[in-house]
Amino acid sequence: MVDSDPLGGTVRRTVLPSGLRVLTEAIPTMRSVSFGIWVAVGSRDETRPQSGVSHFLEHLLFKGTHKRGALDISATIEAVGGETNAFTTKEYTCYYARVLDQDLPLAIDVMCDLVADSVLDPADVETERGVILEEIAMHDDEPGDEVHDLLSRAIYGDHPLGRLISGTEETITPMTRRQIQSFYRRRYTAPSIVISAAGNLDHGDVVKLVRQALQGTPLDTDAAPPAPLRAAEPTVRTRKPGSVVEHKETEQAHVVLGCPGIGRLDDRRFALGVLNNVLGGGMSSRLFQEIREQRGLAYSVYSYSSQYADTGMFGVYAGCAPGKVEEVLDLIRAELAQVAAHGITDAELARGKGMAKGSYVLNLEDTGSRMSRLAKGELLYGDLLPVDALLARIDAVGADEVNSLAADLLARPMSLAVVGPFEADDFPA
Image (cartoon, helix red, strand yellow):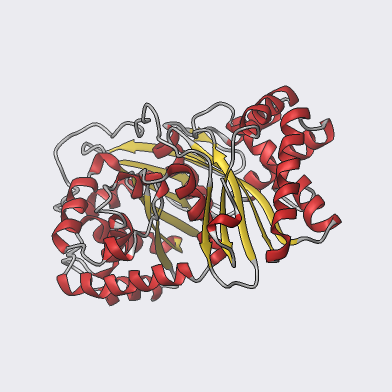
């Protein structure tokens, strides 16, 4: 047993001889179960010519195995009212299903089959290539999403963290089935995989069903230890702060001001959560009140942070009329400078901590979030912090800790990403 959570159930962990890990949280009051297969590989693990291969592979695994075709995979789960999906990030990939508790054996069999034993048929590769190119084109038509990718590029440049998870038309078009297959077999290994499930389940049954589903597949391998946490790069290369502008004749301008942040294992991450809430984490935040409520300059304005194994990113987004961009940027910079120099108030500290605790607990109100918590604890942190311990850690955040972080982070030179009816020289570095 790893943890007994008063807000949920009992967490258990088993390491199979192959190095694959299985974590479950039994919540008898639920009638559903969420089941996920998490692989410690993402777009960060790609060379430049491979850019987008993790995401391409994620699509292809649903196209068929030696036991099931694509329709069989989807129809089998949908026939029992379940749902299945997947997503790729920069450091991991997840495949998941949510079903009634009685249908968990079926979900385990289907999901383990598609992750472990996909065929990657050449015809499917060509079909999905077209789908992904359409997805890339669709993303280019969403300036509110595209601007965040531009900020990553402005900060990290050609480092894998600065590239698109989806890849680009230039990398996806020539990608071969052999390249994808090679990446699949080299990267999808048992020690790099965490299986997690939460809901009305029995841990022993889940372990037994997983072992049965993987028997005889490429993931049924010789004994090996689980893979260690992702190693941090000694130095993650970043670009000199500057501006990246994507000219588009949009009705609204989209801007993000940001800088490198802190890694996910940095002890200051709890203080960062509080600081982010105070700055731009809700309708009571400083940026929202100043820019939207008091001045009416933007419909959407918020701050956010992303954490990776060894670095991170902090940003402030605003969507506003093109003619208001300079004023909005001036107000954002002024607010960041104010907090960097003078810190936050005691009332803001209390509110920021309350928001952090509330959002964390509310996010655990369904089996999917619980399942994700188990996997991320194992895969990204190497430990599962009990809910009460995490809430206590947030409670322990003091004003000095937040203000010290603000003085460091918010005083850093900022990069700017812009999508709208502008030219590059409209925003000189």
